[in-house]
Image (cartoon, rainbow, N blue to C red; front, side, top):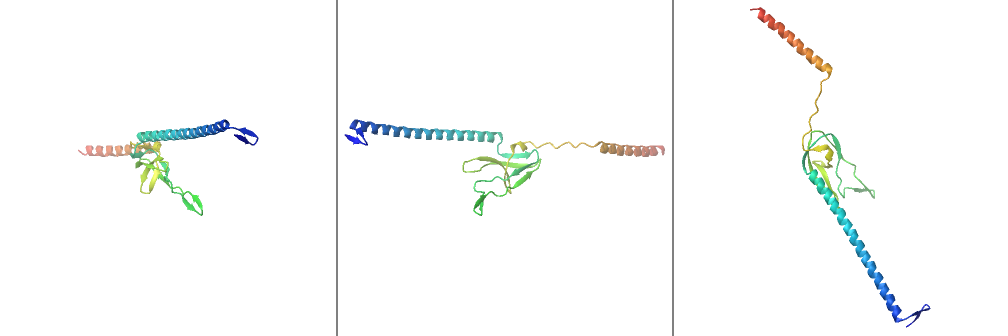
Length: 179
């Protein structure tokens, strides 16, 4: 057929070179497809595990009303797009903190936080939605702590009762002696 750069090229060699190039192209496409398939499969698996974890969280900690079992601070939930550009820079707004007191009844709901469909449990209030801390919430109202009297308070109370009994005995004796 001829020569190119000092190498003799015939039709058979040309055919083999073209065939080899086509095979490499096909293999590269298959690797790309398989790679993207593996990537898609791993993304689906990750999403499935995330859904399972969120469903598990929903079944363990369902939406509804809860009592606060101990005082805690909670921060306002920031949704995607809450950041405001200031002076050409993206700055997060200052955090808003809310204190929840023991015994308070709160309403818990589930919200989608961002475009990745991340679910978060929040305490719904008039002033916004705050992160719900499952460890500090319960369906049952927390028991009030038993207030123990100090020894001095008990002694004074017993002394007052004793004085009342003595005065009452004198009055009763006086009334009985009059007859």
